[in-house]
Length: 407
Image (tube, rainbow, N blue to C red):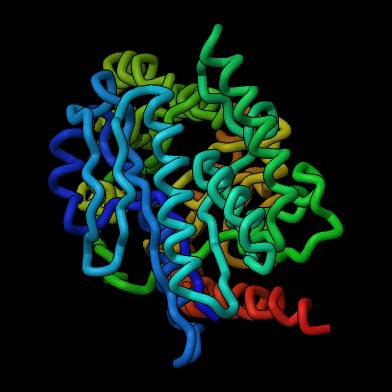
């Protein structure tokens, strides 16, 4: 089997350049997630199987979000084929579609047997390229890793007016093109219904996390040190950040540490100015986020089960939190499999009062119990949710797609 994975990653060779030119920061979490899939797929391939990577650099358009108007076509990290683009709105997307189609057809001409495409997320230029290639090569098998759903099925983008209308048109096209794929790697099972692929080959991988650089920082805490709770991530209202702020305004005995950015950043800064126990660090580096994790007593995710999008989401933050070895407090979302229940503390009531009650009950537990829960969670994700384990069934599913033609 010859596999071509189509990604939206930052090549290591470009990390410094992208960081310097980006006006929005880097999507490190999404980048790490894709690299984990690359690692997992490669670990499960046999000696006569291969993996190639076709990439589109995930940066915003010039000049509002990125300082460079042209993304160069090149090979990075000795293996990642960057398709490049003219980095202007609309021109960028159509250009990427043409470049991806050309590169995909070139790869297909070089690889004649068991040709398999793995597409990371429902990125429209890549979906269009795969759709075009399958017309020319009907034996081509394609699988898509679905991480988010468009329009009302996913998180709000915050766009309005004409851009919102365009977003809806793109979303409908993404859903329609999903039917062209032969198999699906879904974040949650309800995604199959939303994409109308209940009768197609599919599997659920709710998340995976690399075992590289897994040393976790632990700070020695004095008996008189204040207990603190950390949230690091997107600071949007629909993710429960407002209720989280309100809860800690009523719990002055505990510190709330917040880092990230989103539509509530200004409100968070005002709360930090007004309340001595609320601290806002802004958008921080991965190293600083790890330092804050080590400082915290408890890690929290206030995303509640409210909203249709929660059926189709598994917070990747859960795995990152678990890898830290710190205890975690969150809601029991539909997308969180039951095998996580022994390693998480759950908020049982939606809203501010539920968060207050859950934080107080969890903080009242012996520190030894909290530490043990965190360490067990860490051991679990490193052994059971690592790329090699999580991608084993996925790679077999890719092989099975070709077996169907032989029956």
